[in-house]
Amino acid sequence: MNIQVNGEWREVRAADLAAALAELGFAEAVIATAVNGTFVPAPKRSAAALADGDRLEVLAPMQGG
Image (cartoon, rainbow, N blue to C red; front, top):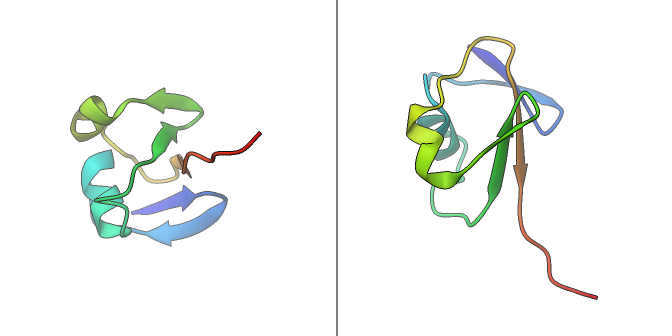
């Protein structure tokens, strides 16, 4: 299926968010995620089903002041 990852269209085989993150190389990363504008906490990623055309945002925490 095609999903938009941080504004870029990507083809993935995964059916849920956790599997998609692993497929995209984010499996071990400390990140925040949102699907179609809705925050998805890490413990709920495997239950978050993806559909063709979904928008996934992956954000890494930043430090600074």
